[in-house]
Structures are given as structure tokens and as C-alpha cells.
Amino acid sequence: MPKVVDKAKMRGEILDAAMKVFVEKGYHASSVSDVARAASLAKGTLYIYFDGKDAMTKAIVDRHFAMLEDRITQGQTCETLDAFLDELNRTMDISTEQASFLRVFFEVFGPSFASEDFSQHVARFFDRLGAHYANQISHLQERKQVAEHYEAASIGRALASMMDGVVLHMSLFDITRRRHSRLVREAISMLGAGLRPASASND
Amino acid sequence: MPKVVDKAKMRGEILDAAMKVFVEKGYHASSVSDVARAASLAKGTLYIYFDGKDAMTKAIVDRHFAMLEDRITQGQTCETLDAFLDELNRTMDISTEQASFLRVFFEVFGPSFASEDFSQHVARFFDRLGAHYANQISHLQERKQVAEHYEAASIGRALASMMDGVVLHMSLFDITRRRHSRLVREAISMLGAGLRPASASND
DNA sequence: ATTTATAATGACCAGCTGGTCATTAAAAGT
DNA sequence: ACTTTTAATGACCAGCTGGTCATTATAAAT
Image (tube, rainbow over all chains, first blue to last red; front, top):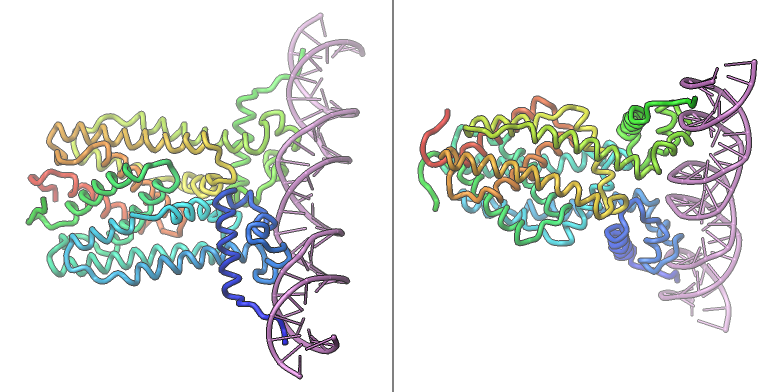
């Protein structure tokens, strides 16, 4: 007899609206009322679906990282260095909305908001990304595609940081896609040359 | 006849206090009153020296970037690739207080606070850093220390992004100095191998 | 139509914010 | 000691925040 709604869908829609507001106004400048307006709901309604602004924020971040995680997991083990470099390339080719997310994320990710476990959550994500790269490197070392003297774990984690740096700069500063592509191309070329064992060249 | 104080010094001390509070409590969670308490001054006094919280923040960031700028400018042109790699190494070996700054900075650097020109200010800093690296690369290319096919400008800017990524991860996540050093060592080794022309090795 | 259980509402609140300003304290010159 | 000019103070304010809850609307089952 009761009225019934798709709660999961609702939550999703609220998060979408919240994200939209945050991107436009900035996270700390956005009030819960702003989000409510954007979602065409009353403020009180939001509190039915989320415990508060923080909980909403955490949900947004969780959702985003779950999506990224999926992406990574999908990637198969590369059999050649070039294939791996291609993967790196794809990782750095982020969409506009991902760039927007990053802007907001970095406003959120600070001592004011980030709880200990929240921050570890993100840290672990990058550790997993680093481990993923490390696996690839390690595999490529066995196949003599990458110089053996590299410590796969360290290189993998370093690559994760470096990729993040490039993506971040592209997102935060006004680097055109054209310029970004050129940077990425050169960077990948340099990384490739650095990883390759002192033997076969590639162009 | 009037009472007189060293205003510049005062401003500096207030910024120090502010920075301390921001690092401990987080930027957005810190109130002007908090800063006043930390500086052992009344709230009103702060408004004598700064137009408001935003102005204070901008001053902190300006001061920090001016310091970094100095550092860069000091660096001389490197005559060998190894010398350049050493410079990169030093750049990534940041102090604990710089790491703290970064945490705060990223909380500040978002749509909520960052004005257009503020954000451009930072963007230009990294462009200058990139240009500095590009110069070094270019010079090393003339000296046949770096493969000629690289586009110095792009590589330089990419390096700036990548360095930033590594430093950021070290600052934001709980990466121990030990691990950080290992990451940096491997990364530098990879970059070095990537830049070097296909000829003389180096270990 | 009526019932019923859930969903949605928005006026309301306590608390805190950045910012002001009439008042008081302090140092330098006489 | 007294004056003068600037420095410092902190109670105060308007405005906005996240969050609540008594009330009303809604849809399903009878």
C-alpha cells in the first residue's frame, strides 16, 4: 500500500546533481540547499537519502573510484612494451568530466574534510594502480621487453604518480587537449626508451 | 611620536601562524579567530594587516611560490645529463613543511576559492618550471647528452608535471621517505635512460 | 472511496562565520 | 608629565550553514 521509489536510482540522481553543483560553484562554496535545488528536491529530502553533506561527498568519491577501479581491472596483461605504453597513453587520455571531478576532488581531499580512512582509501587506490603497473613491468621483464635491472614495484608506483601528475596538470591548469596530447606523446616516448633494454629500437 | 611596528615582520608572523593552523586543522575548517589565537592577536588586528581570509591565503601562496621560484632561478645550466638528473632528484626531495604546504594548497586550490588569476598564477609557475627544464634539455641536446628527436618544450613541461605528481603523492599519501627515495631513484634512472641518446651507457 | 505506510516538504533552529568599529593601550616626541 | 598618533582590542552583527521535524502529498492495496 505504501508509496514506493527506486532508492538506488534516487541516490544516483542526487549524486549527479551534487556533482554538477560542485563543479560549477566549487565544493566548499556549495550548500546543501544548492544541491537540493539542482536535484529539484527539498533539502529535507536529501537527508532521507544521505546522512549529510559529508556522506554525500564520500558517496561521490566512492562511486568515481569504483569506476576507475573497474577500468584498471579490465586491462589485460600486456605482451609487448608497446602495448603497455599504449595502456599508459589511454590512462592519460581523460575525459572532460573526469577533469572536472579532479578539480572538485582536490578541494575535498584535504585536512578539513578527509578522514583518515578516506585518505587511505585513495592512497590504496594508487597503490593498486602502482601494483598493476608493476605486474605489467614484471611480466615484460620476463619477456625481455623491459630492462631487467629495474625494480618493478618501485617503477610501477612511480609511474602511477607520474601519470597522475600529468593528468592533474591537464585538469587543473588550462592546458589544451592539443598540447596535452603532444606532452603525453613525448613523455610516453621517453618512458618507453627508458624502460626498453639496451637493444632493439622502435623508431 | 606615534607607536610604530615593523609591519612587514608582523605580516610574516601572521602568515606563519596562519599556516600552522591550516596545516593542523585544515584550511576550510580554520576560522580567522583560530588564526588570531595562534598569532596571539585579536581578530580585529588581523584585519589591520590583511583585507580578509582570502587575502591572507593569497599572501601565503604567493610567498611560497616566490620561494620556489627563487630556487629554480638559482639552478645553473647543467653541462651533463647526470647533472640534470641530479637537479631533478633534488627537486623531488622536498621537506616535510613543503609537504604540509601542498596538503593545504590543494584544499585551497579549487573552484571555491581560486580566482581566475590566482589559478593562472600557479599555472604559469609550472609553465616556467617546464620552460626551465626545456632549456636544460635543449642545452643538453646540443651537447649530445640527450637524444635529439625529443621536442624540448614538450618534454620539459611533461617533466614538470611528472615531478609534481611524484612530490604530490609523497605529500598526500603516507609514503615513507625510504620508499619515496627508492621510487625517485628508479624513476630518475628510467628518465635518464629514456633521454640519453642511443650510445654511451652510464651504469 | 478509503485506508495506510512511506516519501517529500520547507519553515525553522542553533551555531558559527567573516568582518566591523567604538574604545583602550602603547610608544615616541615634547 | 603630557600629548599625539598609530596599534590593538574584543564585543558585536548580519548572514549563512548544516541539519531537524511536524506536517502534507503520494501511490498502492483494499
